[in-house]
Length: 102
Length: 394
Image (tube, rainbow over all chains, first blue to last red; front, side):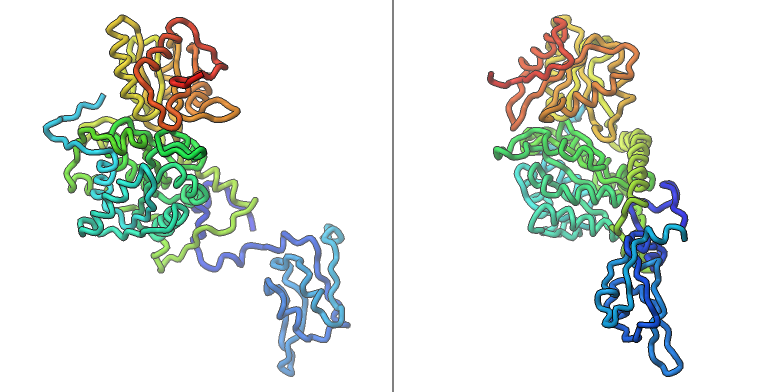
């Protein structure tokens, strides 16, 4: 999202449209990035339950069961709660510096 | 000087004059907490509410922090909201004072100037207002009760203008004005109501068709831009003030400006001050003029935004300028002196300049003190880096 100049934004820090927080990519704050090993993952959904930013991406399979897919990195702040609660240690927190090339 | 028609005027205290202006403005919301010497403003206004004279929603809050918070909420909702305070009450509001300005809410607040504690003191000085000088509020200073009344009405138009959207403090000296009785010419109610008009609403929270959010988190990506907007709004206030003053003159016959020159045409020695002390300065100017001294005065009506260009216009080329401050900035130059000195940096012919701090904690300033400061200037005895004191015991 391109940042706007001071003449282009509403005064007083007012947000003049509802639902705009979607455009605010808090993922830019992240220092550690969660990486999931889907071979280990049992799709227990604990990470999905605990994630404070609703940044766990899931789908529903043909048996109507939720499946862990990955992370919404635009919103994941890298808190590491998912890695902490994962019962099979399928999530590893890696420094963002390892991904600078991307 | 303002000519007041005594036949048309009433003898009232500054507090009654301001409360009467508030009655005529009839804001939707007033939230206030009583504090000496602002108390009679709230008392008078509460009586107007109790008697059904105004339809204002009066919120008796538990502290000044809540008073300012309540008017911030009301103003964000789209209401015309006012409060009033003094000294420690203003200091307790401090956090929300900044939020009012940065949320661009056009709140008008009479501030009855009183010394900040400690040691505790209830009398007049300007330390309370000066502690808020960088808060983003427009700051006006009244010399008389008439001015306190007029500026309160005028401030509404300045604050609410769509190019400005800034809160305004109308400063009046504690006890000297708030409790001192002077003749005040009141405008008819309908004239004031027409002058202030209906409030212009910008992003009102109660407009549910167009929902907005006030006070969101604003970090390194946008906070700076919002501060730049506040700088610009102050420039707009400077541009707009003469127009509002002109319109006010049409209804009142009383002329306001950023500053008021007094016997300046041929004056070689000029004294600059804020507030009620200007009346004493004018008295001394008259007295010394009778003796042939070319002295004059420059009263500052608007302290924020600071009218630098007007200061330069009136002070450039004078022999000497004496600045009187009713507050000190510990470890630095007194606030008004610092601002005047800074403005004169760009003057073609810089006058000699001297700083005099006076009247802290309500210490009386008498004509002899002012004469002494003028005589220092006339005798060439001013030192740019020396802060002097009037009425202080050594």
